[in-house]
Image 1 (tube, rainbow, N blue to C red):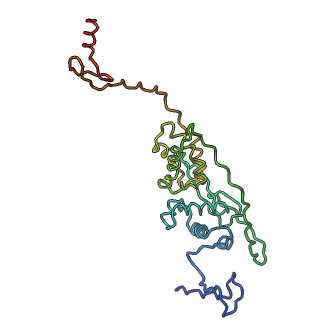
Image 2 (cartoon, rainbow, N blue to C red; image 1 turned 90 degrees about the horizontal axis):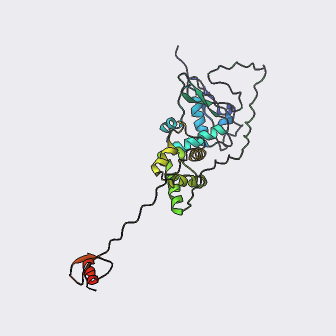
Image 3 (cartoon, one colour; image 1 turned 45 degrees about the vertical axis):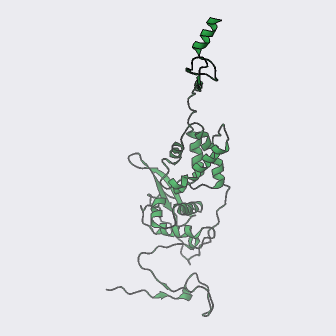
Length: 294
């Protein structure tokens, strides 16, 4: 039997629409009921008062994906045009408001992987992603309208870890350290640092540079083996690496002896022979002859 199109839902019967005069301005819904390939999204997400539009759209996309789909920053950057920096910020928003969780788990073989858990209800009971939850019995009666989600309590960000301090605070050394930190985003977009974080980290990089560590070696130490989904706090990760991986000072090298003075050539006043001396006069042989004659 062929399937018939479902009748559209009248605009005035939309559950989220207030009665509206036919000729007034504002939004009018013209909806068709979905029967396949649809995802149920709560208004607490689509109308969230604190999330950015990018974070809301990204959450809707993630909730529509099947189990096992990759939602790391590189995969999402290849899918959307916003770029890694904006997508990473949107993922952190969703984590802060309870729509995403990241858990590290050890799989057979000993390898550790990161699992991203999408929550369609931030306040819902957490459970293991591979463990089925028991269905809950709902009391009979009229459907209840869900209460608006409470705004999460905003806490002050944790201070960054301390970094090593250089023995020399020359402006040129700190400038080189600042330029190195500002250039990290060209190697990994997730390492885009604020001006405040850069000022905190610059002395630590300068401490490495004054120990005869090349800028290339410092950059490699800071960017190697980053998490696939990007660090949650890039500046904190860099500060930790600067402090814990600080190399020892270079071995002591005695200063080299200054080269011997090389005098210019002079013409002997006695024999016209060339010799080296600080100024004009006689060569050694002529001076010896004068002493013997005396």
